[in-house]
Image 1 (cartoon, rainbow, N blue to C red):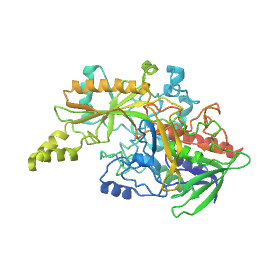
Image 2: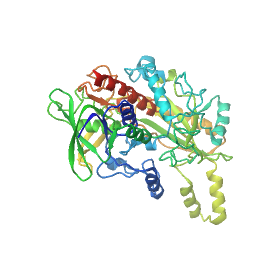
Image 3: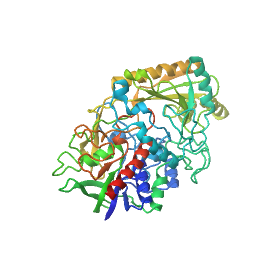
Image 4: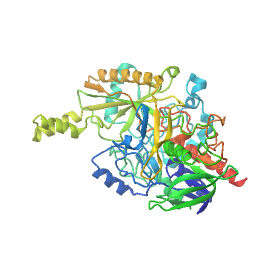
Length: 533
């Protein structure tokens, strides 16, 4: 099998790259490790699954396993000291199936943390370079937003749709914020506030993570399908296990394994690795060979290093009056303060969201019912007590950036998974900079609960996010300290592009997904230029 451009992975990066190239008539082949499943199939799995975590609608398959809720330690070999729980999917459309739907650009300063605040590292690109591609990605997704709330990223063009309204609960929190001199704002969303691209309007199912049941929230299967309609070939259940380098240091071909164990090779002129921040380095490291003894694209020794995530902390309590959570998108508004400022020289930026999903994950209606029944509460009184309590559930979630650290990394473990590939071995340590940011966020959250007169206020220990995974093949100018250049081309193999959040240098609190899509569209322009040379 052969194609002009071979793309490995059909998620946010792979789908946008494939669509951009196929539109221009390029012969594109996408190899997706996981299966193709309909939204109806995923919904049925979600309904039937007693576990309701982010992975619950998407069963892991033996031929291309991914992490599963409650069994992260079975998937990852934890080398500590902090437990890593990054969640991603191997599936047509990729991990975007269960993303939150935040449609944020990174702030200009996020690209220049070292220059501005003396911490982390600068990206080899800046905000102005990415803006034209941000615009294209937003036009493809359809973004609902309020131009008065851009979350630190200046823009000279309108959002595609009006904002998703802030919830009643958001407004109650906002009242308390005014007494503290703080402010709230609506988030920008890759979900429809009106009909867009033949997709439905959000009707507030409150299951954005793990799945939008009606497709109002954008996911990359949209552009995977558009890529196919434009002429791209997408082969699912096609796990790439090895990248072969030719004598000219160019990628020659990749080895693909089918679920029945059959293998075949795929050749191409250009290869693009778009498998997210765990599988990208895992495949590169697993492709060690003569001429690439430490793995493909790894002359720097940095493949798998500088693993990034975020740190989270929840704070929850019971409000004196109903705030009516568990309706609308799970996050419609958040705290504006603490996301950027001179304090970032000393502590992490914090993104605090007001969680319309209430106490989910801590003490939802099911666990409350069990507690009340154990206390002898039944019948109408049970119903009344549940309704009264659940209507007053309030939870604030704070996310903190982490600093890039070369010792935070993925390696290949000595244990193999069900597909016969070495499992990912993760070493991660949460830095003091992050811990200081989380502590500052918790203090403010407790002040908010106090201003609202909340009782039973609790918080958990800081934990690593399962939503954000980045780093591991980061971009840079110096081939000795980075894996790809500013165009996402491997320093070692000039026909190999490595896309997605694995190329990101930092993981600030503005979500990475729009940047992933924008840089994939930019990479398509670079590939076209190379093909025409």
